[in-house]
Length: 148
Image (cartoon, rainbow, N blue to C red; front, top):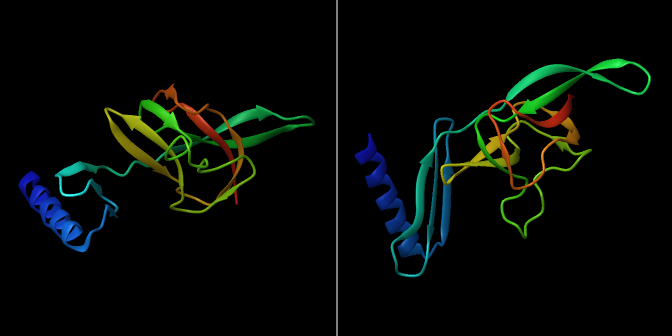
């Protein structure tokens, strides 16, 4: 399987070089391939990474007048939490934003692999519980959300 993936990456890179495309990303439900190239050199980065899906849990939280159920999106892996794709880019989500199924809500870097965390349901972001560029643990709460 690794040789099959390697040959696919090589053929995609050849097409990118021929068509003068600098960056290509292909995703499926089992994997994601991201290829970036610089001029006539070999690929800067090519990686196959699994699609990670966050866990959702129900936790009790005291609110001003009564107790209500709040849902959280938890980290699917241990790594470094990034709220945006790069330091100069806007964050993926802010408090009050509505997220749709499949929206990227953050990136968790683990072992030099950038893993996009995608929404698995429609919801409103109530609170961002983690600061950018901080370490997170498996199952740590990242966002408090209200399902829509």
